[in-house]
Image (tube, rainbow, N blue to C red):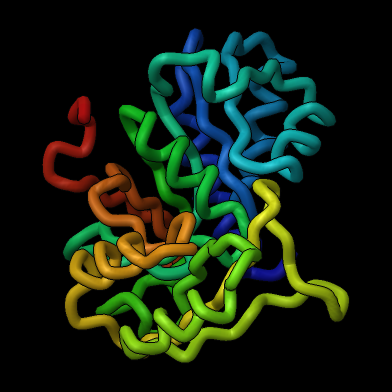
Length: 234
């Protein structure tokens, strides 16, 4: 494993160590899940009794391969803890950009239903302001998506339809994703509200007020950051 991969695996293990018997655990999508889910599966094989709630079909398949018992989000009232990743994270505000893995809608629904959202990242994902390095994914309905894209442009973005194998990328919910470059975002809450208000926008990848713990892997080791009131019930 490359050093960066080893660091991220160590951070994923730190997050998995927070899981306690009997918990309902949200299972995030993307590269973090591909490290955390097998580690959680190993604990289940050793006798840990938990139930996972996956945020994507890909994560669901991975969890089943590791024999993690699963439930649908509709079947639970509240999740105890979710382990997920982020494309960008601001430590001062705990604001995130997520969605490069294409599961931002389900990830946000699970995060909103979780008592403690644990985000695992490597140091390259820590930024001074959202939008500094990555576009903001915006999930839109296919019908009239070009009109939606033009409305997003009027907010100052450069939207680009996401592709997969030369075809439009389709989410698990049957929608499209526009990757919207805004450059550094001066007011993420205002932009989040403006995006959500546009007809045709299902959800966006700006996550505010949802993360409780951010675990950062860097060459100096693993650092765990807690938001004020990080274990609060919301």
